[in-house]
Image (cartoon, rainbow, N blue to C red; front, side, top):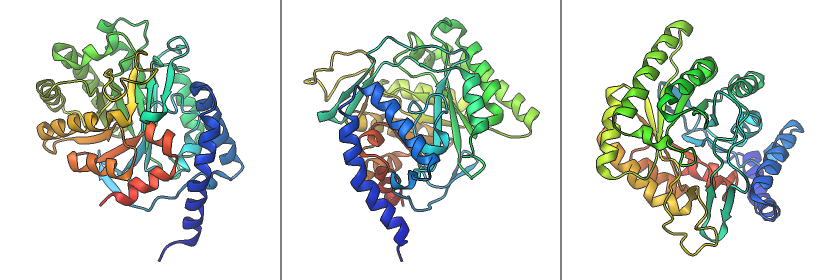
Length: 354
C-alpha cells in the first residue's frame, strides 16, 4: 500500500519544480544556482523542504564497505563548500558528494563560466574549482546533522590552480589529511577539464606517482582513526578503450576502493548548433549520456567486480540510471538532470532500481 503523505509530497514536488525552474532559468546561470540553493536552505530551516522533495523508497545498497539508503546520489560540484548539506540531504538522495575542495580558497575562472543549453538539456561549465578552501568545508561538515541522521557523505578533493601539476600530490595529501575524519568516502578528482594539466594525472607514471602516496596515507589514517574511509578516483569520459584499460590496471594495482565514471567531456558532440558550443569548459547533461555510459562499460569490463563503480554523466531519466547499472555501476549520481528535472528525478531513478 502506498504512503499517502509520500504520494502527496511527491505530487507537490512534481507540480512545483517546473514553475520554479521557469523562474530560475530567467536568471543568469550562476546567480540562479545560488538563488536555488539559498532558497532550499531557507525552506529546510522553515521545515518546508518536503514540498520540494519527491520521497524515494528505501532500497539499501552495500558497497565501498558502506550501506547507502538508496543507490542514487548527488554528484560533486553542486555544493562545493558543504554549505547546503542538510537541505540537500532532505530531498531523498541516498548519498551526497560535496566539493571539489582545494587546500586554499580560490575564486575559480573569470565569469561568465556557466552556460545552460536548454534545448539540448545540457550545461557547459568552466568554474575552475572555485571554493572557500578545505578548512571552511570541514567546519560546515562538522556543523551539519546529515551524517548523524544516517546520511552518507562523500568529499571530493582537488588541487589549487597555483600548484604545479608536478606537485599536485601535495595538495591531495593536504586535503586527504583534513577531510579523512569527516568523510564517509573520499574522491580524488583528476579529471576536471577546467584546471590546466589536471587530466594528465590520469595517465602512465603520473597516475602511479599520485596513487601510491595517497594509498599509503589512507592506510596511515586508517590506523590513526581506527576507521577505514574508502578512496575513489574520478575519471574523464574522453579516453579511448586502451586508455581506460590502462587506468583500470593502475587503480587495481594500487588497490583503490572505487572509481567514478565519468566527469564532464571536453567534446561538443550533440551541441554543435548551440550558441554556446564554442565556450570552453566541460559539457554535461543529455549529450554526455551515451558517451559516459560507454566509458563506464569499458571500465567495468576491466574492473570485473574488483572495486566499486559510481556511474555519473547524463542521467536525465530513470532509464538512464538503469543503463548505468546495467553497464556495471554500483551507484549513480545526478547533477545536470537534477537541475533540469528537480527532486522528482531522484525518486524516479530509485524506483527504477532493481
